[in-house]
Length: 163
Image: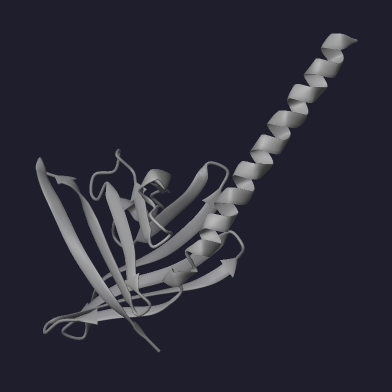
């Protein structure tokens, strides 16, 4: 009888612990609502656009594309998703990876004041890390980084809120 009571007590503790972790992750996704909206950056030759909207309590959906000389040079569908193991950045890029999603997990230790998101997938060819920083209400600084062909590589995507 003692063992049965002890087993039930442990089961209740584990259940409560798992619920608290899920609630914490959901709260963090809401904290990242600053990413919602339409963002862009135009230099002399190209324009990069990224926009995000909330699908439900556990998913933000987005699209990004780069335009140059009237053509779409690059496009991808994006998701920021709450899953059992954490929060994931999930791009699906045209003409890459057979248009299958690639998961990049949020690295919790790198999130400072919910104004910086760092996602990693160390097994991906390039990038292995995706970073979004939100220094001001109308600014996002995104970058992708990692190793490509044995060399460190970083690409920057500074964006400003439009609309």
